[in-house]
Length: 466
Image (cartoon, rainbow, N blue to C red; front, side):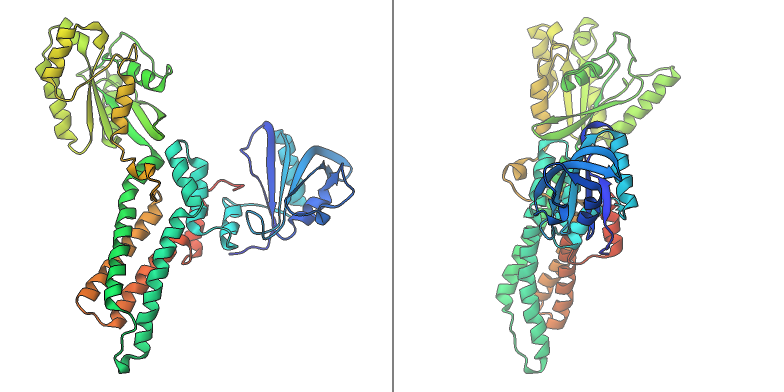
């Protein structure tokens, strides 16, 4: 898949800005840039400059000056892609960006495809496959936890753990294969007791990595939290209090929220996506009915449910606390696997006696005033408690990639077969088959085993220019 073309792309987001960076990579990157660059500080050509140097000058289209720029020179193999790389920092006008890119295209470059710079880094041995995938995760990280995981993976934390397991298994596999060459002599080069200990240790690590995906997936994609309840109990006010901005329309008119409103915040470094839903009640309003139907769809998608009710109206209208308890049980029965947080809102409008009556009647109830933001921080801590951040705090390896998770599951399955074979005294030739298959799945993670289709699928998800 290594392509000899010199590629070019905008490495910064498209659109106008203070500056933009245009990146070239390939055998003729320096030569092509040289044809278009005129230094203001030196008569030297870029081809004569040392690696990792920056030069002030102009990009010229024949005698026409396009822009004053800074050109950075990175020579192979000490560059991101492992090839000669040129990065041009120009002014951020969309017109200037396009003029420079089109000039390089006329000089012999071609436009880079999505993720092609990182693909070349992988193919040239600058990154393994899991590190390359971490680049995309790092770019898309929008909270502290996902950033921390992506940085560790990009630095090779996950790769080194997998590589170590693979190397140890490979050593024993070599000894098993050697035994097959001396099958007639009936000798054992691989100590079966040591091999069993190794297999037990590998299974333990694999199980930990597989289990970490539950946390990793949450950290990477955020936790959807549905805020539900009857109309006019303060769901939109709570959303605004959590987000610390006026995101949802607040009104005394019941049924104001007709459609789900979503927004995301970071709590303790973890992303939470809050969904303010339409109030649940019997209604003849067609539009409101559609909103209520969507509410139940959003509850299905959510991982955590917040059930909110109006504490003030219960005592003002002498409504039954038992009726609220029945609604809570309905939700628990309908969604038994989802954590449910029951919240009494508008506690600033009721007495201490009424507060005591609420807490005594409804188990594990949370008390807040969304209007004054009282109890909102405690609610955030409660939500954070649903995420097992222990692995994150301990700086353990956490799997966030579905492809890695799938490969780990398959590797674990094959290693379990090896363990079973050792326990039952399976012959070396049959053990070798399962060991090879386990090694294959380890290699799939780091890219030691890969194919064009796999690489195409991975790098198609990257942005162009990275």
